[in-house]
Length: 339
Image 1 (cartoon, rainbow, N blue to C red):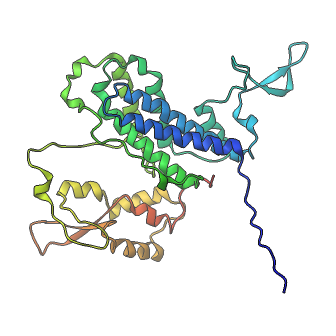
Image 2 (cartoon, rainbow, N blue to C red; image 1 turned 90 degrees about the horizontal axis):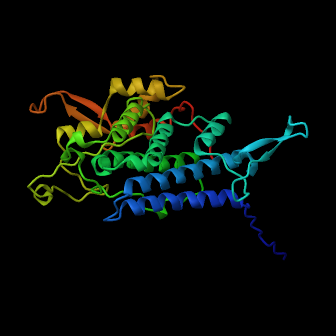
Image 3 (spheres, rainbow, N blue to C red; image 1 turned 90 degrees about the vertical axis):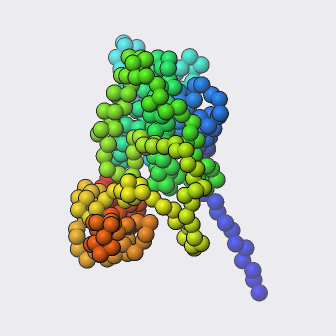
């Protein structure tokens, strides 16, 4: 009897590509760790510096792979001059002061990615640009405490977008190994401070970001995530209501909380679906998917039109997470290819 030895061939991963991914994830983890320190007066600016670096590295890793790991596509390239001073057809990397090749910046990286036919969400680009502006203008923020809440909202969105892009591109990073959380009380509520002490530089920056938030598009990415925390004299233990259940612990929610969790009625859901999908139609395929969604309490909430009348008709409202289910049925517009 002959025995055959099983040979497992492992695909070789490009070292530069792997290094860019590792440095990217470590940079984002460092940004979060520093932000979460109990006493760190330069937290927002440091977070922006490290978070922008994390984004730049993961985008460069994506671009490198798209160009079959040809490192020159990450370099700033200049034409080689002929003896008569004219430009030749050849190019060479521009060198920095240490005589090493200069690499392109984050916005040039995004431009080259889109030149490959991959459209990045405008929300991602606006989120990154807002952080870059914070990094570049940090020296002017003499009273950064005043806008720390707003800056944390940018930070939440930055981390959410970063995790989403890793999942969408199927990047070789195991997110289950890490905790991507900012401390929810790591800011001083800006309402406490007097608005008149805001510097002109801070006002200009806030206006810059607000303009981008006003132009948010409807997709899985965002520019800023709202933080709304209220402090009450009563403690949370008095309002605990729970029962044992296989799928979690139900809690009491106010009518406002419910509308925030389930923002779409059927009309709004359909309108957004038409913008989101290439092949969306209200056919049997759609109605079958919706029947499945309506059975999921996490995705659908049936609200009484008259909450005080037990015989009142119900109207269904849907969570933003409904898109994850509908994405399985319809084709998203401008969906990127896998990394």
